[in-house]
Length: 155
Image 1: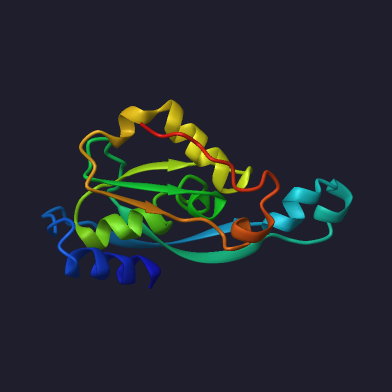
Image 2: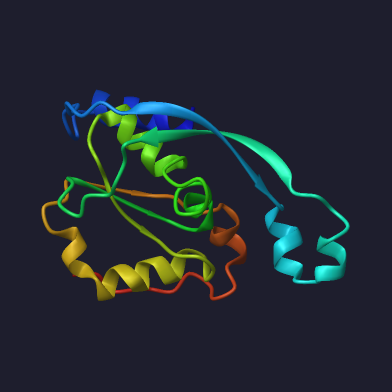
């Protein structure tokens, strides 16, 4: 739903035209433990809870394209199901499916919203030819970021 809403806004504003690449959705289930259980890193506790089965919709085929006119920046919320199992089932792939063309993306786990901007500063070539940057981050980074809201120079 989020990917569809963002795609509609992007297209309504005329920031990019709809592409021509069509992708299919493949229903797929993954078995995984929740992030909190994994982050506490206590195997004795993890063994007490079986993995949960999560129904996903995988975008087939999908692969990022660094030459895309759209760059998506994000944190672990964009990584899950996109780079993790089952892959290509996260926000990025679904947004690309709605827009009908692949996207460029830069995702950074941990460090809040500052690390992904630092990464972009080091990989500034990713901005070449971009018409739009979509940046996802958790709201708490505005108020409670561990590093604060650092200024990061971009080209």
